[in-house]
Length: 98
Image (cartoon, rainbow, N blue to C red; front, side, top):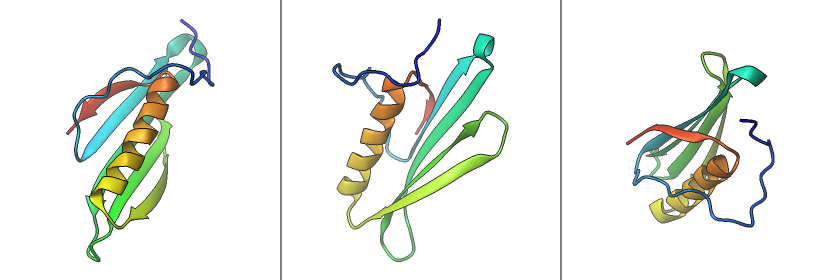
């Protein structure tokens, strides 16, 4: 099954599991040599800021990382859930979470 890179957003993504600290997605299509992973982590730094870290890349390869900082946990969680839904719309599947 071929998964398009850009999926129309006129429908809702599949439901996310209840997660609070981290979630990991994979998109595997051997016939297209596609072995991708994407991770989202929510944590609090020593200054009290909430950090949403995202990492992505080829499974087993080097990962790209970006971080966004928020004043409240609710803002951080809303941003993380928005990004998680975007991964689901792009054909990724949840592999692990906590």
